[in-house]
Image 1 (spheres, rainbow, N blue to C red):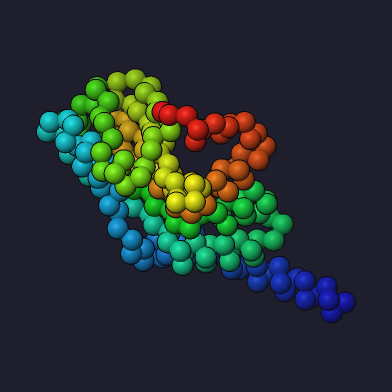
Image 2 (cartoon, one colour; image 1 turned 60 degrees about the vertical axis):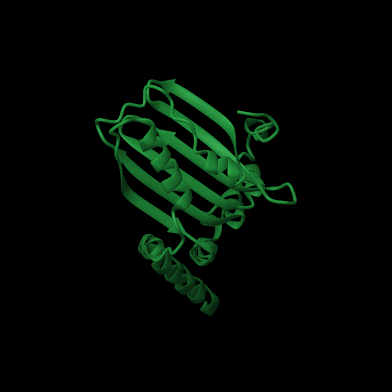
Amino acid sequence: MEMHQYGIAVDRYRRRVLSFVPLLIAVMAAAGCATARTSSQVADNFAASAPGCALERESRLVLGRASMAIVRGLAGLAGDDLDEETREILRGVRRVEVVTYRVAPECDFRDTPALPSRLTDQGWRAVVFTAEGAGESSWVLTRQSPDGTTSGMLVIVLDHHELEVVRLDGDIDRVLIAATADDPATVRGLFDGDA
């Protein structure tokens, strides 16, 4: 009987802690100290490619090493409510940055802007590019570590209304394997070919 009551108390504690997750993530994001150099380079380059264009940063979310450690700790409290693939993805991600820029109406991206050459200089390589219409483009770039593993992923999405830049740092190979566990062929060859 005592053990049953202990289990109920643990479940109540777990639910109480998990109810604070959104607030904790918001606080950790506000405390993020990393620079947004990569996203700023992309935004500045795109704005310069369209005369008279201005991009205004609307939001920025950064979860660094400490924040991600807290997120992984909170995920541990979820018990069986969190699947193994999600846990593996969290173990692989060291840092997350998401930046959204509002595209001003005067911006004309009919011609797809080029990616900043500084990204290439920093080791980023485009592995996927799509253009779905005038002014609607997306890129996936990766960066390799000296040992040949993928240590970073940059996803850039541009349309008439916004520019979204998402950067993941960590063991990206591990993240992709976990994210595509149900269908590993979805990323087969992604890092072997050119965009």
